[in-house]
Structure formats: structure tokens, C-alpha cells
Length: 265
Image (cartoon, rainbow, N blue to C red):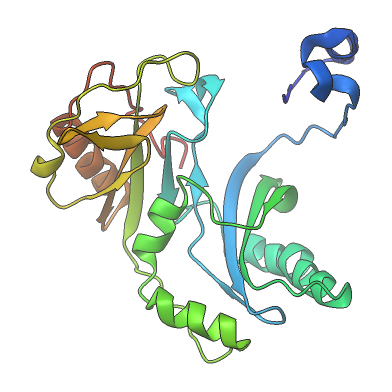
């Protein structure tokens, strides 16, 4: 469990609760970190173990409710590119975080090839690391890959061979917006096995399946996050409008989605 607390008194109270069994066995060890007040963004690189290439940058939206209210989720949507990332912040991100990470792996004889996901936060135009992942992000991948104009398989082959230097990563200049359709009640208790209809009616957007399954010839819900709808357009607002339009075409009992993805950009 993760708790974000706005006072020392609340922190002490919650530490007592944790050691009192709030999180069971997982609460036997507590990590206390500095609270960073800023705006988050996600940076993705692909590395052959020595060199790296930048993929499109994204921002995801974790809260279940509009205007970033409600409970945290696995992600209700994402946007790429991210308007507040200027040249200064990007240079700092590369010099202070990405390059030292790649060099550190090499210096420690860690032979890692593949994706690195940097979960960062912009505090007064300075980047800080919140988390690392040795994978892509979700729902960020649903806006990153559609904006990647390269052949991904060719890049992966060169990574396997140990030399990515010949690739010049090309980003689609258009904006991408993903809207996640979720089961009613998510991220808390929700029901599965709801019949999904209307996917075949989606036009000019990409539908990514997440919590779905086919049973007796019918497409059914099978998780909290069910489908992701991604659209590309000249502007973020146009892309969002397209995703929302297609989200309305898909139906299943309890369907929920946020309509304000990218509202703070």
C-alpha cells in the first residue's frame, strides 16, 4: 500500500496503523520518502545495454474521477506528447537521470537490453525520479507506440544484436490520446462477464483489449480496465474528442470512463 499524507501528525498515525496490522505482512517494513509537489510524466527509452534511444514521452492519469479525484487506478488514460516538457527540462532529464542510469547499468555489469520506463515528476522545471520499471507503461504504451513511426521489430532485432546506434527514432507529429473504459466499481469491487458490443462500430481509433475474453462466441468483460481507445489527431483536444466519440459506441453494463484526459495540459 502507498499513502500520501499532508502532515507529520497524519504520518505518525498511519505508521501506528501499519505496524498495527493495516497491511498485514506487507506492513512489517515501512519506507518513508520525501513528498514531491509537481506534475508527473513518463519517459521511455529502449537500450542495447550501452546506448539508448528515446521513445515518445507521455503522461498518464491514475485517478478514477474527473479532475484527478477519487481512488488511484492502474491508469484511466494517457496523452502524448506532453506540452509542459520544454527543451530545458528534457536536457535535464537526459543528463541527470537517463544517461546516469544507462551508465550505471553498464558499470555494474548488468547486461540489460530492452525498455526502461522512468516515472518522473517535474518540480519547478527539475526532474525527479518516482519509479523505474523494466517494461513499458500501461496506458502510456497505447499512446507511445502509435506515435512511433519506426518498425518496432527492426529496433528489437538490433537491440538483440547489441547495437541500436543505426536507428533514428521518428515520432509522429500528431497528438495521441487514450481513454480507458472500465468496469463499474473499479478500482474497488466490480463484476465480470458483462457482454461487450459496439467494438466493430469504432472508426478512426485504435481499440486495445485489456480485461476482455471471448466465451461462447461473445466478447465479455474480464477485468477492471476493459478496453483502451486511442486516437491520433493534429491536436490533443481533437484526439480526445475522437476517442470519446468512439468510447460512446462501445457498450457493456457498468461502463465508465473519464472524459477529461489531458485536462491539465
